[in-house]
Amino acid sequence: MINLKEIKNKIVLKNNIYSLLIIFIVFFLDRYTKIFILNNFNESTFYLNDFVNFDLVWNTGIGFGLLSFNSSLIYNLISIFICLILIFLTHLAIKADKFDKLIFSTIVGGAVGNFYDRIVFNAVPDFIDLHIGNFHWFTFNVADIFITLGILAFIMKGFFVKND
Image 1 (tube, rainbow, N blue to C red):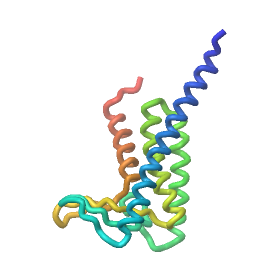
Image 2 (image 1 turned 60 degrees about the vertical axis):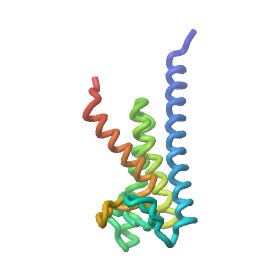
Image 3 (image 1 turned 180 degrees about the vertical axis):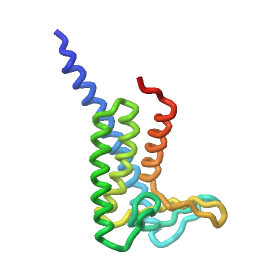
Image 4 (image 1 turned 90 degrees about the vertical axis):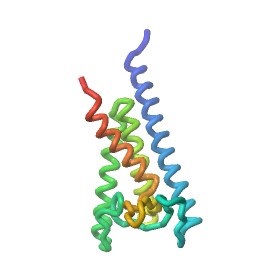
């Protein structure tokens, strides 16, 4: 006789393995790009074109350099808060349906990449500098791209997907 509960558990496990794979891929892409930049552009700016530079900046705050402080107490409190958010998002990814798993997995993968840097380097290396003329956007990294895409997908889903 077919055990439906066992089949459901296997499907959930399979979907969670895919989530872990996405998290790993995002983390790997982030680590690879950061290692490449740290090894090749540590002291110099690389001008890719008229709108994009690679320029290494060490970020002690959260995304896009927000909440950067020189206080180690504030830095450690922000790091603890980020760790709690990571645990919460991982829980959401485990419990979510397929599309939400993808969304939360991309956010978690990027956040784990930046959290790793906070622990290892006490700062996050940001290096992508978008600009038009003298107007520069916040410097960011690959992890920030995935976090932002995940958040935008979550917001767009809220606007366009109707839950029954």
